[in-house]
Amino acid sequence: MIDVILKKGKEKAALQRHPWIFSGAIDKVKGSPLNGEVVIVKAADNEFLAYGYYNGQSRVAVRLLEWDENKTIDKAWYQLKLQNAIAARQHVLQDKQTNTCRLVFSEADFLPGLIVDQYADFLSLQILSAGMENIKQDIIAILKEELQPKGIFDKSDSNARTHENLEIAQGLLWGEMPPEFIEVKENGILYHINIAEGQKSGFYCDQRDNRRILAEYASGKNVLDCFSYSGGFSLNCLRKGASHITSIDSSALAMETLKHNIALNGYNEEQQTSIQSDVNKQLRIFKEEGKKFDIIILDPPKYAPSRSALDRAARAYKDLNRLAMHLLESGGLLATFSCSGAVDIETFKQIIAWAALDAGKEVQIIKQFSQPEDHPVRISFSEGEYLKGLLLRVL
Image (cartoon, rainbow, N blue to C red; front, side):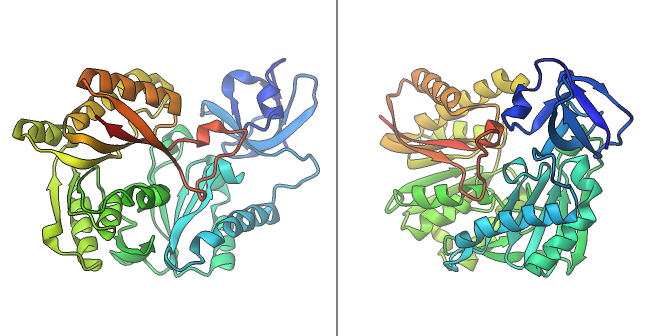
């Protein structure tokens, strides 16, 4: 194994079990490791720190895997890590009200660059690091052995792969090709999931708990669900007796999938209105029309993919929330989210405070949202805490 030697004083993060070594922290590499090759990371005094994936073309030059020098990074090592991750999620699926969740969450499960989502009898796989790409066949073999899925689909179409010098990949890896729509259940609600054409790995299972919590406020309410995608929040609110749901998304596929899901759960079409539109544009139209809602949900895409985009993202979040506040009845509820890892919860609260000031509204935080337990946050890797949200009373 090739040694990667850090500059003096740059070993602190590795000693604290943070899984990333940035290229600027490296003093020298004793050899020419291939992208994705497992290397030994050492401090300047030659002390062993960890094993990790090397990638000379990425800003994150090494993704650390194992801190025990006596362990061997082989198929048995990966199998144990996968077994542990899968076992930790089993109670999420035990009540039969949910059969979809995230089984593996990258660095949080000590498998950097690997995401595995379960959709009923199918698995959706995302590989975002060169190291995981190199052992993909072992990963597939282990998943087959542990879970016996009907099929495993490669959904490695994230731009994150370009940072690892990997090409976009999508297609069947093993078993049956998933049907156009897989029927899954979450919180007792049925969904048609399109893995191949859907966003992310096919479905936003990271909002499972938040959908259920918010729906408890929806009985008899007129609800606006922005960035609704396949209708997670809309369907949960309908289940809890919302008087009417208006769902907005710019994607035609999302609107078509939502229509399927409304019918799949037996709801009356008159209870829900779908609008295919840019959300900011539609909110301005509603303001001009004098429309008001009891509950508004804002679950936008990632506005800040990196810290360099933080200022621009803050302005986008502020404008979006300001518009929504104008459309709420006095005392109405705003459920607002950010899935940008670069935006921490305190920054997000400050952005909301600016939005409230611009809107001339008084706002109370009545609940704080986070990602569910199948998206755990490793205590040494705060970057994994990407989803945050606030339930606000707007006066």
